[in-house]
Figure 1: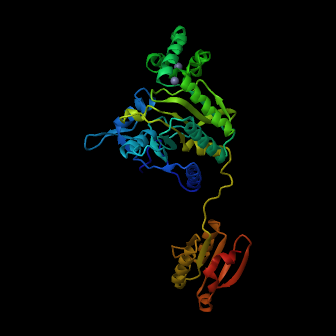
Figure 2: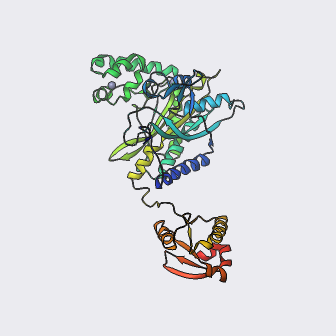
Figure 3: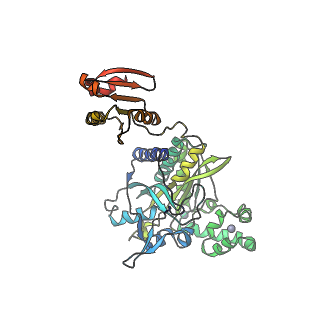
Length: 419
Ligand SMILES: [Zn+2]
Ligand SMILES: [Zn+2]
């Protein structure tokens, strides 16, 4: 037997219904905030991710699915969405009319991580990108989209954690201060952080190692080193969150390791077993587009994983009331000579918008009834040769355990029968 590849999975049955529910909510929120959908390729030139995600990250260092295609090109399966959206934005000259572009995407991403609960090598993510505004209004709108969406999905104690990591100018000062602070503790840092000390000092702040955490507890905070412009930007973002009554806390440990991230970084967290867990992460990346394009274009966005989101929603019991999908009507053919008739009735009911199931295996009436029972169908129509002659059929309401003979003409408006 050929099995699915480790870290991938099949989603079917009631599971797909959960997925569609979440996807519909995302689409609904994109509509509410006027973000248009963009569908980007699932693979791109490796170079795009090397530059767009950055060489110092785990993603690029060890997690990408990279291969050489038959034309000798290095190709990578997309590990995230932003790089592809930015490539599409530039390639399609979406900057040409100088207007703001608001885009959302959704789909499979690929990373060769160690599979664990809620983590897959093919996983699904959605995200929004707000491209073309440097204003705090844009940051606050993106955060509000994320916050309101997760709240609407029903997750517990949704909160926003937010920080500002400044711009090219003020971040230099901060990193210098951070290095000065860390220097006396250098020997106590974990091996990863020793390496990061010179290449990616900021990332030491979000190291999970307890020793490193302890050391950075009293580290200077990024917000103390912001230049006036960055400080004002940050305060305005917070102001627009206050206006919306979105609960947030400033978390000075929240950072992004890459140079093109600027100012706002945020996470949306939910309460899980008493501790706050991130469900979405985002921020401003004013210098990313300039790495692929002739000029910098400011942008802000966020991304959220959907696999873990659905797992969390399951744990919260948010899908408990969800039923397996079932047809509205099952039509039982009493004998094989009424099959043509059954087909016609089924199609006419489908035209009226109903979901209709019929027997496709030439089964006996008894086993058709059994199948209708198994499907838990509320409405069953029974058609036999005698009834056809009389122009009637039997309608069984399974919920009410009632049965009556109805005129074939009544089927032209089945909704009325249900009333
Ligand atoms: Zn600054
Ligand atoms: Zn560390």
